Length: 72
Image (cartoon, rainbow, N blue to C red; front, side):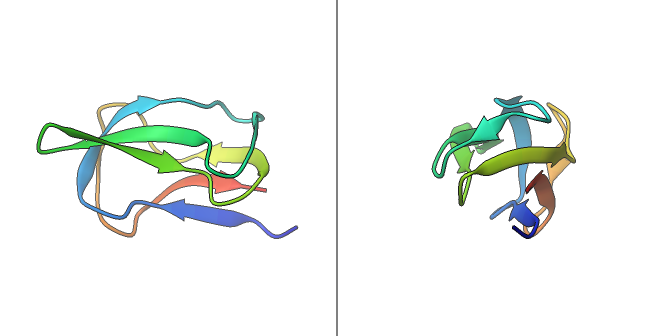
């Protein structure tokens, strides 16, 4: 299966990372939580797979369209 890039849908800050590299996830599992204007926004897995990479850190600001997580 091809690698899937999970993108940020908005400008925000990474509040909490819920997974680690190597974890198996199901579709709709929460990968990380973004915070924007005091609102928590979960970023969910678009499909079942394995976390191949986490490209952000907690407290890091992110921009719309930025790659957050890689799934394989």
